[in-house]
Image (cartoon, rainbow, N blue to C red; front, top):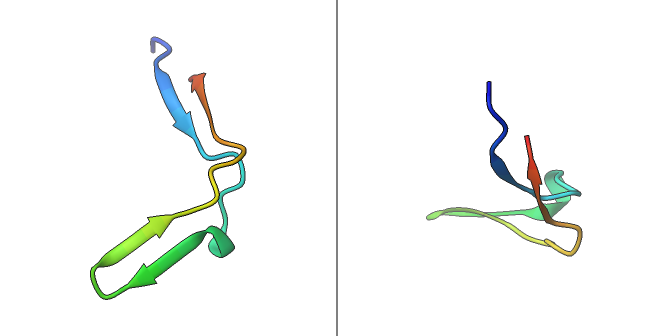
Length: 37
């Protein structure tokens, strides 16, 4: 399988997700990066 660019959060967990009636948003992207996986 070839490698491809992937957006990685770096600190994904329940404390970094905001939920409301319209959906969810992942917050706190200070350790985010683009990696090859």
